Length: 206
Image 1: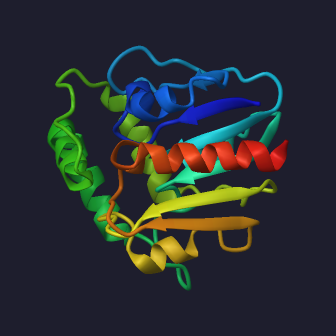
Image 2: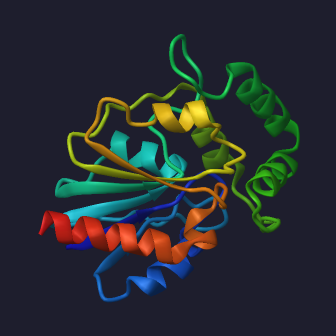
């Protein structure tokens, strides 16, 4: 079983190093949206499990690999913005980010990463894919997956409040795991927990 890693907004393939190291016995394919350098598209041949962080889950759902057998969504969601009857981030908040991004893209990115608890981003950024994906966070609503989902969340996630975490993947075949002491960067805060969830899905799917 292959593992396909899809990072979230404002990060790159190096985000996965702590978790990928714990799962090195599996064949791995890691994409990179190119926020900080050349993008790297990931062609996944054969049966695979997607390991997706945050916005990466939306990306996987929008363009699932042909052999997708399951998803381990870490701090992930299928919709980010709020709609009537569905908890999410208010559109006014995302619109404010977009307006400021046009003038100060690096400052917006740095503030976002501080909120997540991440280090300061590289100063050399490609604003075009970052803005395009921020628009996707505002508007996109890919379909729910038809494959099993394990959803891992941090109980202290500053981006995803409890109501939003509870709404994620509602209607799909989902098993939820919450780590009370962690936030929005579970692959770095609790890589052993994430690795155990991935191994569990591999075993369950055979």
